Every structure is written in C-alpha cells, then in structure tokens.
Amino acid sequence: MSSSSIDRRQFLHQFGLSSIALNSLLLAENQQGVLAPMSPHIRPRAKNVIFLFMCGGASHLETFDHKPTLKRFAGKKASEVFSAKELAGFNPEKSFEGSQILPSVFDFAQHGQSGAWVSEIYPKLTEVVDEICFLKSVHTDSAIHSVGEQLMHTGHNRPGFPSLGSWVTYGLGSERHNLPAYVVMKDGVSTAGDGVFQQGMLPGRHQAAIARVEHGKSSFPHLSPRKGMSDAQQTEHLAAINRLNRLHRDRHLGQPDLDGRVETLEMAFDLQKTAPQVFDLSKESRSTLELYGDNQFSRHCLTARRLVENGVRFVEILDGATGRKWDAHGNRGGLIDNHRKNAARTDQGITALIKDLKSRGLLDETLVVWATEFGRTPFEEANKEKKIGRGHHHKGFTLWMAGGGVKGGLSYGATDQLGMHAEENPVSYHDFHATILHLLGLDHKRLTFRHNSREVRLTDVFGNVVHEIMA
Image 1 (cartoon, one colour):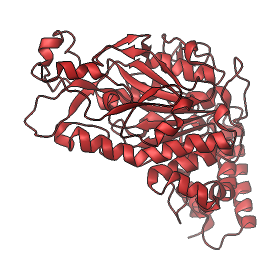
Image 2 (cartoon, one colour; image 1 turned 180 degrees about the horizontal axis):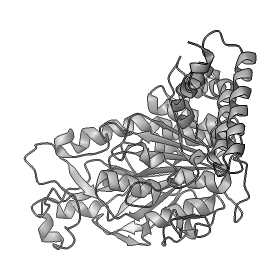
Image 3 (cartoon, one colour; image 1 turned 180 degrees about the vertical axis):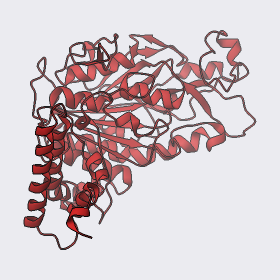
C-alpha cells in the first residue's frame, strides 16, 4: 500500500495510538489546548479526591447506622409501622406493605475515641474510625440503580451531564501534563454504564481515563508503540501528525478541538513512560503490599494512592460494578452472605489506604469518600425466597469522608430510630456534591458552564455546603 493511500486511522495505528486510545486519554476540546492548574475560588482544604463507590446500594443498617430499636418492631408488618405514603416511591416493581420489619443481621460495637458504631463486618476499618466523618442522613431522589448512580455521580437524573470528577478537573485543572487529571479504575461496567464518567457538555478533555491494574498489561489500552519503533521514530510521527493538525486548524477556523488533539498525542507519548512507572506496584515495599492485601480492590486502592501522590486530581474506584455486587436482595444470594463477602473484600484495602495516606502526610490534602447509590429498607422484602434480603431505599442512608479537611471521629446527621427517613440534619446529594467542591476550594454556585443558553452546574439550582463537618 502506498503512503498516499494510508488513511488517518491507519496512520495513528502505526504510531501506536488508535482513536480508541485517544478517547481513553481524554480527547481535548479546549481552546487553550492546556489543562493547566487553575486558582480555586476559596482557600482549599484538599487538593485531590479518592472516590470509593460501592455499586448496588450498600445497606446503612448493616454497615454504619446502628438501629437497636428495630429489634422491638421485629416481625411486624411494614404497613403496621409506616403509612402508605411512606412505603411509596421505592422500587415500582415491588410492594412492601406485607414486608416484615428486619433488625440488622450483624452485631454492632463502638470503636475509637469517638465511639463510632461500626458493624462486625468491618473489623479492620475500626482501626481508623477516628479519621472518618460519617454522614448518616443522606437522601436522594430515586431507588432505581441506574438513576441513583447518575444522581450520585452527576447531580442529575438523566444521562449527558458531567460527572463530579469532570467538574473538579474543569474547575482546578491538572498538576501534571503527562498524566490524566481524572482516572477511574473499575471491576466491570455498572448499571448506569460508563456514562457516569463522561464530561457531558464540558470540553472532552475532562472525561475520565479508564485504567486497568493488571500485571503485565498496559494501564491504558492501545498505549504501547508498535514493536520495533524507536522513540526517535515516534517523535517524527508525532511531529508529522501535529503539523497536519495545525495546518487543518489554521485553514478551518472554529475547530478548537484540534489544539486538544495535538496535546493529547503529546500526553500519550509521555504516558508511554510515566504510566508504567506509576502503575507498577512492584516498586512498593513488601510491608506496604502486605498492608493492602492482594485482591483487585486492594490493588486499586494502592494504585489510587500512587496516582494522587503523582499529582492526579481525581481518582475513582468502582467496586462491585458487574452484577451490582452490593445489591442485597433475597433472590440475589441473601443479605448476610452478600454484605459479609463484600465487606471482607474491601475492608483491608480501605483501611490500608487511610493508614498509608496518613503515614505519608497525604491524608490532610486527600479527601477519601465512601459512597453508594442508596441504602436498604428497614424491612425485609415480601417474596418467596428463603434468604433474607432488603429492598432499595433512598430516603435515608450513610456515606462517609476522611481526610481532606473534614472532622475525623464525627457522626453527622441521623435517620429516625428505624433507619427510614433522614431526620436530623438531612444531607441531599446536592449538598454532598457542594461540600466536596467546597473542600477543594470550589464554589458550587460559581462553577458553571454555559450550555443551551443556560449556566449548567453540578448542583443544578440546589445544594448547601455542610460546614459543620469541616475541621
């Protein structure tokens, strides 16, 4: 084939960076062509975020929200305790009037100087409980998995809006030119899909870079150069491509995405050297590897520490994405086995992450967030399955934060005595997002992007910063 007949896609492929790779590495559409650090609106308390998201709806009643009063009502029908209005608005496919009130299936105990209540399924997490700020009065607008994931990630109940991570990089830029500012590690595709990591109407460079942590494999797809191609040859190819891009841009004004394409190719070239170093866990000491343990989630946690240590602004770890592993229905294996296994898989990695960040002096500037799309009902599902399960519950549940300017050892807000409603100091998902942005030095009301003749923001027209949880 003659050189004149090679199309653009083939040319990029020979360079070692296909169009898929470009999408994975944040295709840019920024007129400046640079994702430089930007000044925050206010004094920041945190520099970066590690967002731990448990897919499927982790039960607050089996993790961090101790409700002994449920034992007094055990066995009563939900319709005897709650009104028809209270029982409406959950999963539309199910009815809960005949469901029985169900106490926690696990024991709770108080830990640390703060006396925080923690379920028995998190034995290691109790070692760092005084670093954690529990938000026990979170509520959201939907008990449907896909919608719940959209709300917790983008602040909107329909696809197409920027994710939290995208807004953070849009507001603060990046500290590194040779690493993505927003990285996601996951164990599968969640119910809402990878759309929750998209940049929406923001410039394309704010999309997440999906990374994998597997020994012997590239951290980003299609990143490795063609065999036998030297650095000098790649540099020549890169220069040729960039010359063509600039020529096209200069002849066809109004296409600012080409500036971003030039920078993306240059970042990809740099990533061939930086990514293997950052993602190489063999560089860690034996004691650190033993601290984290050796499963996929733990490796993701350790990699997250390495990423923020190297200037990555926002890192998300998606746990249990394939099959919604935290979805504790009776017909999905049962609540007891579900949560015991999921907690066992994640307990060591989360605890190690907090300990490791603190020992390195990084916890004060790194906000660690543990979240899920909603909680679980205080009553058992009315079904024919023999195994105990709980339904979806969005009216009151628990999330937590650590480091990054929040008060450790604090439990903020509360659900009622049965864990049904966010009763004391309720925190909406808009408040949750506004607070994270504030900790990073961003005013959620000023962080906007004009789209379709209106100023779009993460918190829509809502949201209040929860100042009470800040150190």
